[in-house]
Image 1 (cartoon, rainbow over the protein chains, first blue to last red):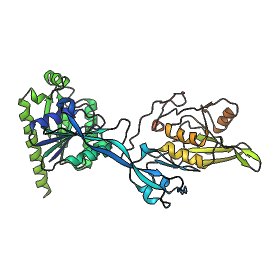
Image 2: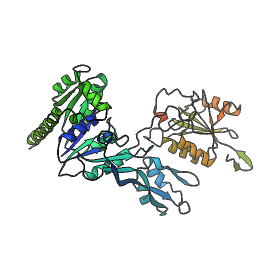
Image 3: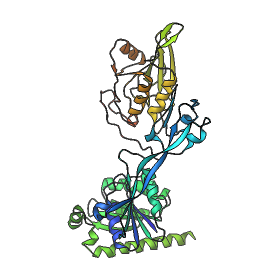
Length: 285
Length: 154
């Protein structure tokens, strides 16, 4: 089963939830999908090794064969090709690697080469949880490609926890698009509430079953709880605005390690998710 | 700079980024996302307004817009801000880019002819810049500016 941990607002506790949930379960894989700034391993401290280079195919134009027919530049919807009066210029950072230009080129002037986007890394040897992360090259914008490559390492026989990037844009869709369940982590502040509603719109559009965790519970007001009640959204867990939890976080320690009573709470949440999925399945048939 | 030889007379096309057609429309200091390119030939006084088909592209707007004016045979571009991708195209082709335009297209051409504009030596904006509303245009930001990268991913 694949469970994504997402949020609209950043800094609500996606990584905290992902880590603590993964550490409470057995036979589990953890994927850090926040490839622009993966931070799970700050808390795990695993030795990592590269398992794959993520690349994007890019065109190389043979200017001698090119007749400047403009077909490639007219076709490229990302405007990565400029057909100038005397040559075609290519802008690699805009290319999404669809390969359409090479297919269209009637002069066979376009060959494909590869551009590096980032890497996939894995915790060395046997680790618990089994840990993978993507790492996007600095300055690179092709975030979704790295996330999609990372997700190839999901083992369907295991429970996979996916720590998603914040927001509601393409990298989030790439992370949560095909999961079985999505946990939305929020806090009951004006920003937390506003961005939660955006995230709810996303998971509903994607038809992914979901529930909410309120982190730093006690902070702010009750608007998230009222909203979830009115919308029929299950609140899976409330993590209190607790000094000990904050302190452990600041020392890079997932709090289930020092507060074992939380193991059971995360396990209970996992069972509740399975029940919710069973109910959804039943309602469908 | 490319100066065309046409019947023995040296010609030079000046392009101004504008919000409308013709010499009386207001200049638009955003190169990639302006609505029109008003192209003026000082010799023949011919004016041509080319709609900017790239204005609403989600990304690579500067590249597409630069492609349009390069193929329109422009030699001098009068605008406000140019990003790195478009700038590299202008450098390649030797198109002279002058910034600091104000007022109408006609006034911008006068400013250019009076030598009141500055020649652009390096990009003065970042990709996605023209997407912002009320972005403090024409304040002479140097290299970088306040642009935010637009999400070009799928």
